[in-house]
Length: 364
Image 1 (cartoon, rainbow, N blue to C red):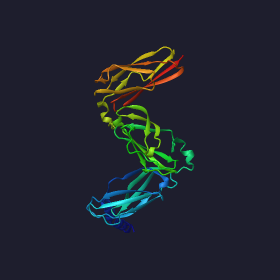
Image 2 (image 1 turned 45 degrees about the vertical axis):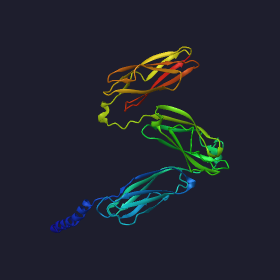
Image 3 (image 1 turned 135 degrees about the horizontal axis):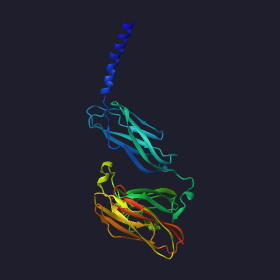
Image 4 (image 1 turned 90 degrees about the vertical axis):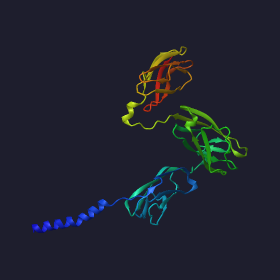
């Protein structure tokens, strides 16, 4: 009986071994996609389905056949290449998204299975869906003539210098005539581009204003507030609104191994308490800036959040180990009570390119 058990065990081992080896040597020959993630931007619910197409090729020497495409939501449907893909043959996956009753940010998963990849390759369709308001008068209360917006101003948020920032703003046409942007925007600053979707917004309909803010062209750092005027066709009153943005210089991520090879800004004090001061007397203080790194430190800009604070800096470029004196003068005239002022320093320190000094006081 014992010998029979040993024989049975050997039989099972020998019988299963080829299957195990075959599973090990099975390669996942994948389709090479042009992009695995497509962001279709901001869409309007009332415009119905939107379609995105994923394109790919078969880079392997084996024929590939798409056997199945699975989505994670009934709001998405797919069409795909059903022919066998030989080497370097092109394939596509068309994904349709129905935005009805699905407001906000969305990210839809698409799994593509083939005869050489039973696990499936993963694609993503992303975007932002703006649902149709129940009451347009309430939703778009901020009016510029016949044009309604949700807010009286547009905040672009943080804009980095490495790429333009894009933002979509809803517009509603309360007038009787279509709304169209003038092709020549004579009063628009060169760092800002404006496009309207669709080109013509019919009466009692909604559209989108796409603003593109280029921080490189603006060539400045810090917080900015601008008055924007967009001229319209057919003599309509211009669209006028405030635009705010905070511009930061972009620095690529720095590996930890290189942290000690770059310029580093040192500040003697970042939280200064002036305590009790009189409203009729200016107050000055000195702050020491230093370069704690082995590379040249460049002070790009120093700004404050109040015209009542004046800044003087004796050096803008500091060699390794060198120091500079920053003098600030605070004029508290016309102010009373607890007060906070900010001094912001922009430099080429890639680890801390923006540093803030807080100045506190109690004004009598």
